[in-house]
Amino acid sequence: MISELEELTDLGAQMCARARSGGVLLLWRLQSRSVRRIVVQDGKNEEISTSTSSGHGIQVFTEEGRTAFASRDDFRPEEAAALLDRTIHTAKEPAGLGLQSTHVPTLVPATGRAGPLSAVSFDRLDPRSVATRLAEIEAEIRGRVPGVRLKVSLAADLDAWRILRSDGTDVLFAMPRTVLRVTATSASPGATHSVGCSVGGPDPGLAWDETRIRQLLVRAERAARLARDLLDAPLHPAGTFPLVIDYALAKGLAHEAFGHASEADGYRSSILAKDGRFLSGETVGAPHVSIVDEPIEGDHAWQPWSANGVVRSRAVIVDHGRLAEGLSDPWSAEPGGVPVTDAARAESFRNAPLPRMSNIRIEVDGSLPAPGEFESYGPEEVRDLLMSGGVFRRHERVVFLSGYSGGQVNPATGDFVFNCKAIFALSRDGISFHRPAIFAGSMFSALRSVREAFGPLRLDALGTCGKWGQSVPSSGGSHYFLVLDPDPALQLGGS
Image: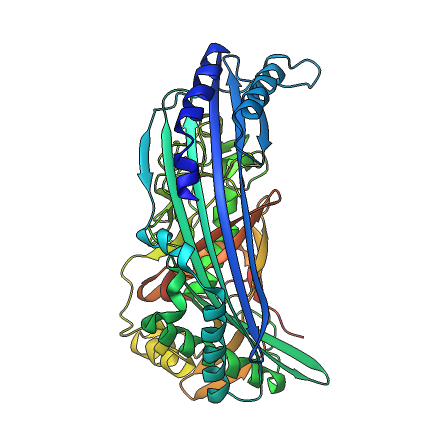
């Protein structure tokens, strides 16, 4: 896969020379991708599949700022040159298509290669051996928690890109991603509950990594017990309460509420902007709270260069309670009044890039200690943390929202709706267990309500981000746990 892209150097030089002679800037995006998926359920192989795709996307920009885009599913030289000629013609003859001019940025040429060494081991992945290993993992979980239905899957994805520009830019990067996931399901005549968990990493040999498997087994046992116990759990009363959220739900809040609203291609309708300009300096949260997005090597959502061939930068979206930087690309940054972070990502060579997040998290100054690993914290241990941190001196009862099961936000209003996996009501006198419920409210109120954080940063909450029909990997997190003081604008649902 990577060698396939390396072999296109001569064709790339020809394409760039052709674009320069045609008076346009060429962004030539080449992709080669392979995804292997193995699923085991009830000890049987449910799926063993491999999908591959490769091709290139041509995007040209005229001196007047008009752009056109086209793609092909192959790398044949004659067809690539002909497609480039047609794309240049389209950009230069805009009357029939109604193309309008846009800002033409100054791009700095770049060259480089990046990719974790684990990328080479994808070719050696044996799906049958993986299926056998997944069946062993499933049997281990079933032995710990009988009475639930289990599905164990491994998805190994090697996504390689080469970005060339006619200004001399040539970068190649490979993004290996492996996710090992367990879903536990329980059912009764009146209800069904499914709870999932996962671990991830760049190495396709993840299923044989003893450290990560131990971590997965702890998470899977907890998920299976939740799925089983939720059948008899009562609803929690609706209302406004002091809350504890874990790093997975905090990642959902950062990603859905602030991340998407900070993407510069949406400032005409974002609550974080006015008249198309980012409201840098506006107070949106508590002064000890920040939100940061940046690529982290080896992470599920790592991407060293943008889909425009520009180094992806760290973006401090919220800096100690105030809006600071947006997620932009070279074309949206100046109109949006933000620096160029070039957060442009594309799912496929067939897609035009969009400003997107990578690893996003909530950081809190002066976090309180939480010794050990996150997996060692159940509701009892969380209650002990709150007691040691003095939270129960302020609140007699705190509601712990455990896990994250998706949600959505309206970027124009800042209103969100999230789902957790389970609810625990914590007090000095005891703990009660409840079914998950809707957590809804204003993103500004949520960020202003963050009072304490416990533990170090944990940034491995994995997900998939969808925008304009494109799905890309996402990740992030926060400290182990965040405490939110009650606010009338934050509501926990009930019956």
